[in-house]
Image 1: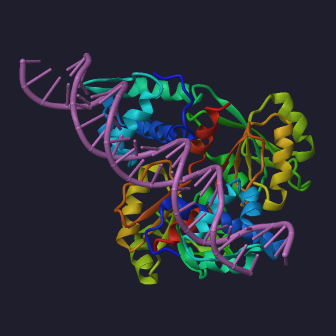
Image 2: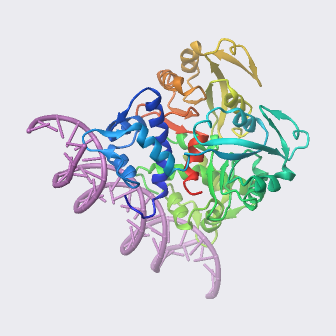
Image 3: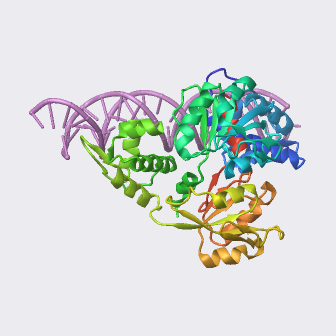
Length: 205
Length: 205
DNA sequence: TAGATTGTTAATCGATTAACAATC
DNA sequence: TAGATTGTTAATCGATTAACAATC
């Protein structure tokens, strides 16, 4: 166990390990090894052992890792051993898909508010939610103490909305708008842009 | 200009440069510098120059890069100077959102087929498309010569569908299912899993 | 010309892998 | 015990940064 700063690149792999372990647990497995886990996620056994050992001695020589125990530890490290309330901004097609997405359940997240600046969408029902006016966003997000938001607004509005979210206290943004966001160093952004992802593969075709 | 193998990590940044340059072009700019582009994308000027210079001498000392020229070159390198036909498998909420997504236009991609194994969805209209039976997938994808697919099926089906797509000739898969895919080395996979992306940020909260 | 900015080299920094003692 | 597998070290590999000559 080391107390030094953990590289971002290692943190980025932990959710992948978590997801694979969760599947193993669901299929009834009790223990695994760095070798086996590595085959599932396409990462070398040595790297998996090194990554995990940054946080503690979670394995046992000879037998490997208890899946349930490692799951617990990874959830604790990633702070998804709780439920994070999340704001969704943008009630278009992607916003709708995210609002109805069942995959957040059991992985630490729950959408609790949906905003849109389009008055014709405000008041509309999406699943259990009612779309709220984006004008109320700063106030509501701040009052609820939300730290996480998902952004599915047009590229032209994304930076402005992000600025407001940050002002409201948000520190993590999942950005679906196809544009780079400029944010303070204490705000994390993850990007999901299908066209960009596809363009990362065409080079090899 | 070097002929050596370009690292994946550099290829991965090119679409980000491309996207930023496209926005600059749209806003009427004619030239930019590694410094300016770097500020837009959050990458050092030195790294941008090094990345770009792997492919040729596209800049001019003293004045920087012609945006239009660099756009052309990047599109050519990434092979998005053409339109790729893409198969979409899975006609759920995410599939619908992707089918209606306007962001592929002008970035090199066009969905041309939508498949689902749910017979109640087959025949259904989504935008201009009709959902086709997944049983016809291998045949149709092969006949059309498609090399790219987007996967929005449940995790439990993703590996099986991926195997079939590969059998049909697909070499690039954008996978929305929350599971790691095992594929031959000549098949590229990109992953989009919102929960995983969110979990990469909670550590820092 | 003077100023700006590239492309490239060398130095630094960081990540991955291989190997193995420790030990379950 | 014998076999298996961890955690960790050292070696290797690769990526980033700093600096600057070249040159527009």
